[in-house]
Every structure is written in structure tokens, then in C-alpha cells.
Image 1: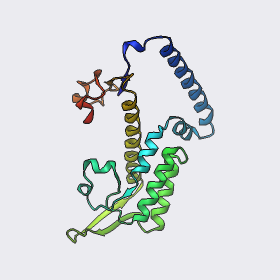
Image 2: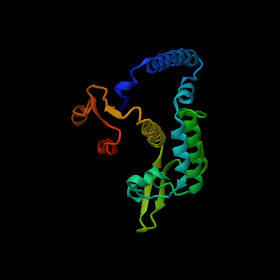
Image 3: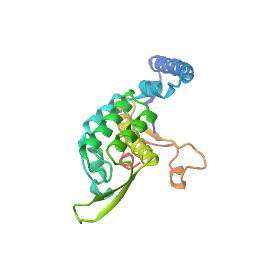
Image 4: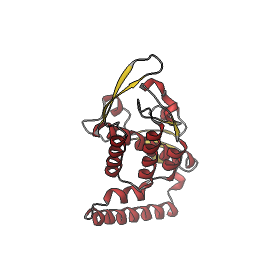
Length: 212
């Protein structure tokens, strides 16, 4: 999504800000190239680009919930509760949540988070396949923690945090930037239905953005 301003904003102060933004991007790109040689590019990118709103949202979402199926935490509840399906130990949930917050803050890379999470779950006897009993029906259900599962947990939570943080910025800026544009990558992986929305421009408050 691209946030658009009004025509009235096309004036020297806006142009000056655009130039400053381009200069900052060039500085960041130069810094990233230098840091990449030391294997630190990911942490620099996260440190520079993480909106504080993303961190705040993750911290506020610190209510831990044990769940045994994806239906146990429903739709908007995911925005207020942190859960990992069938991980029934609150201490492990807390540790994973706290580490994700640290990562979004820029203090922990994705790779480091995964290594720490694997060690945490291994030490607790949760790495690999684990059987848990669902208290609702008494059934024994299996869950599995492996690198693919950790990537899913990390990516889902961090992307949701970034998206929420960026949208809060959009809401705060809608008096000066009242429109949002839907933009796709315009490649072969874009779904047909999404391709139809490419370049669609609507007000920030339009109901379309509640589901897209």
C-alpha cells in the first residue's frame, strides 16, 4: 500500500523532505553494503526501518493464550493475544514472545531468534514431535516444532507487527495524506484477483482497507 498526499502538498517543503528521504536511503544503502561485509546487514535494516508502533503493538499483545487448534484464537483475537498452537507451556510462550519483541526492536536477527528458539524448545523437551491432550475433548493431538515451524512463527508475528505499525502511521497522517494506493509487484506470482486491484486508490477510511 502506498500513502498519497493532497495536491496542496506539492510545494518546496514537500520537495525538500523528498530529497532528504532520498539522501537517507542512499546513506542507508551505503551503510548496508558496508555492514553486509561483516554479516550485519539484517540487524542494520531492522534497526533503521522498524516503526516504534510495531514494537508497541507486540508488547501490548503480550497476553499469552494456550491453544490446541487454530480456531481457539479467532480472527481479531490474534491482534490482542500471543499464541502458538498446541504449545501449552506459558513460560515457553513468554520466552518466544519476548525474543520476537527483541528482534523487532533490532536486538536479535531472524537467524539468532531461530537458533535461540530451537535451543529453548530442545531443552524443554518440545523440539520435534510432541503429543498434547486437548482439554475440550480429551483427544491426544500431535504438534511438531522444526525449522519450518519456527520460520512460520517468526514471519507471521513480525510481518503482522510491521503491518500494524505502518497502518497506525497511515491513520495518524491521513489529514495530510488522505489516500492509499494498492500496488502489486506486477509479476507472475500476483493472484488474478489482486492484479485487478493494482493501482487502486481510495481514502484511508474506506472499508476496502479493512479486508485488504
